[in-house]
Length: 53
Image 1: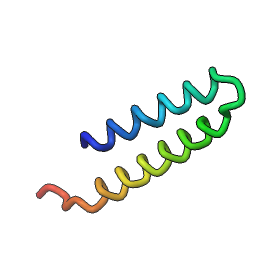
Image 2: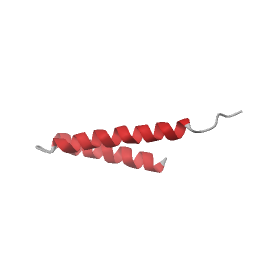
Image 3: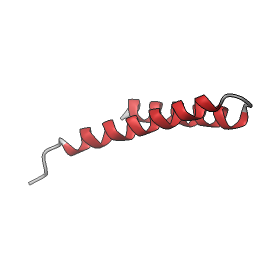
Image 4: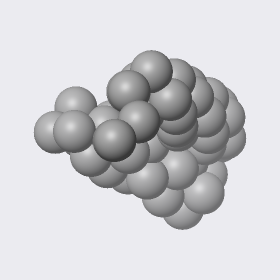
């Protein structure tokens, strides 16, 4: 869970830097890709848990 939050924070920071700094739009794209990958990995990990009885 800590890695999920860390990567989500990194994605947000990269996105903010990419939007505010001129000519660094690629950082916004990298931030979006990191966020999508992070959410995908978290969804896969949560779906593998066994249901409670």
